[in-house]
Image 1 (cartoon, helix red, strand yellow):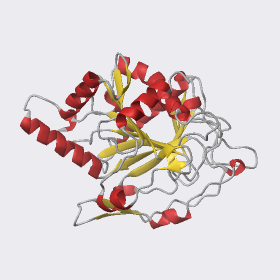
Image 2 (image 1 turned 90 degrees about the vertical axis):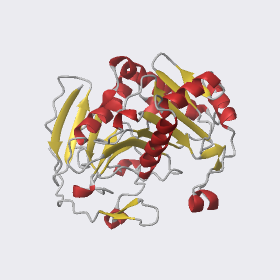
Image 3 (image 1 turned 180 degrees about the horizontal axis):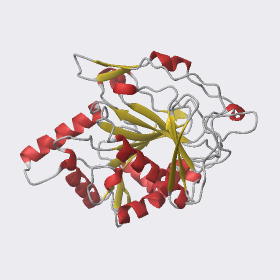
Length: 348
């Protein structure tokens, strides 16, 4: 992997991640862009303790442009984009409309492929490994940012999820606080440790799922994928390395080598869930990583949460009154049935 750092016309950082070590990236951004100005602000909810990002400048962000106006495709003569080169393997750049910026953190866009009509599942293993390596590299780099306490790498796919750009891409949010979801997991882990001083909650969950087996989707030498016992979403898979690590940069060589093929298999099974003739499955792919400088950082377990809002062909799982108002999820698909369907999707 070769990494090249450059700047866009408005000063934002752009990084190319290339498979070839001899790749040369010298194309400059010809656009007459003004410097990015943001109004990002972090406010705290006194009742829930949550942090909320107020980012009014995002109202004007690009929304579902046609393919010939996509800002994530390579640049063409007369049509410059966010990526000045006429081709790329993986490109990462600072978001032009960030939810977090400056002392409030940082937001980046990760373009997996120059092919506007592809998806992550269409990549070969070498290219998928490069995209995953870029996420790990950005996590390690953003850990040095003085304002950042946690890095979240994720991909939203599908208009049903709320995607505003159709080009296959992911994002990285570098938060200046520990997210509420992670705080809850850390609190649960601490309570488990108090009850069982020599045990780890994440390890025990994975061990229990592997022993039960009914919800296991994939079990390899270095990774385990399963539908959780109390799954929130109709089809939801959690993927854990067999050796607990806090984040992507901490994976050992063996786990890192096995991950691309395993991740591609899960994505392809999601696309086969609802049978031929149905549109691609919308999903969120979320990497949960330990916060930096936390006293219990090493007790946290890196894991992927992959889920879809589609519960059956033509029907979506909406967050209605119970979920949105009280954060109590109601799942119409039994986790054991979801796991069985995902196992069957391997042979279709």
